Length: 204
Image (cartoon, rainbow, N blue to C red; front, side):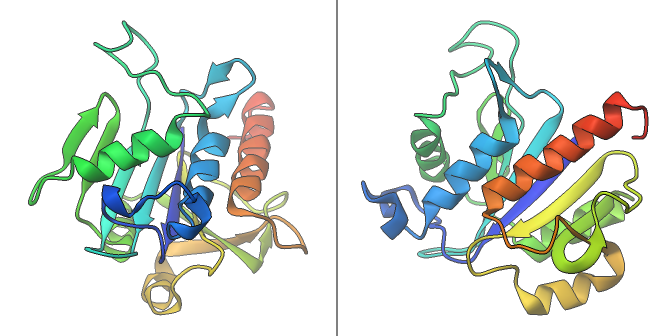
C-alpha cells in the first residue's frame, strides 16, 4: 500500500470556482493529472494506492480530499465510474458536497473535509506512518530505504509550503527522483514504478 499527499496553494476550495478553463481555475488541471497518475493503469485502476489532495486556494481554504476508489460491486451503488475524462467533474462534485464539521464520504472511497496540509501530515505521522517528501536535495529514490506503507508528499507548480515543511522536518525523509524537475503527475508515475519494482522483487 502507498499513499500520496498533493498540496496546491491555488486549487479552488469551492465547486463553483472550477470553470471550463481548468488552468485558470487555480491550476486544478495539475490535481486532475495527479489523480490519473496515482490510480490509472492500462485497462485497470490501482487498488494499492490512496491519494490526499490538500487545496489551499479560494474561497474557503483549506480542503482535504481523500481518494481510495472502490473497484468492486455495482456501479452507481457500491462504486462510481471513474475515468480520465470525468476526474474534473468528480472533484467539482466533492467540493460542492463539503459539509461543515465532518468528513463527508460523497462517493464510495471519496471523502472531503476541512483539514490543512500540516494537520494531515501530523496526523499521519502520529499514526507512525513512514513519510517521504519529494525534494531535489534528497537521497535518490533508487537507493533510499523505503519502509512499509510509505507516504509521499509533493507540491504543485509553486512547490511545497516552506514554513509547514520546516515544522515537519523531523517527521519525513527527503527523497529525489533525479536531477531534473518533473510535473507532479510525472513524479507520481516514477514513484509508483519504483514501488512496483520493489514489490515485485520482494524489497518492500
